Image (cartoon, rainbow, N blue to C red):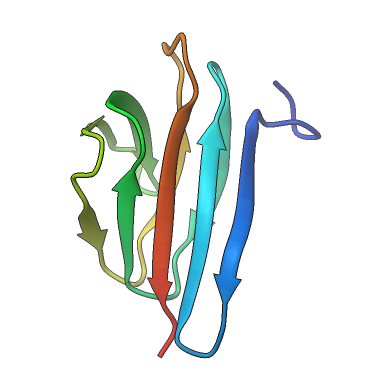
Length: 99
């Protein structure tokens, strides 16, 4: 993976004045580069797997995902998300509340 192809894709499925819904796929060894969430959001995992979350302050969290078990994060979250040890893609839907 490299800067031109980080090994992740985001497919926006809905974007209106209230919500933005994006399906994310992180290939094995891939990463969603460092980014900041300007809105509160919900993550809906489509797989049971583990991903690594590296926060802007350098701390790391191993996020254990379970298919269909959602979680939320506040606006202002800043991190990168990766699949460093996976054999399969990590796939989830992110629902941002825009207003």
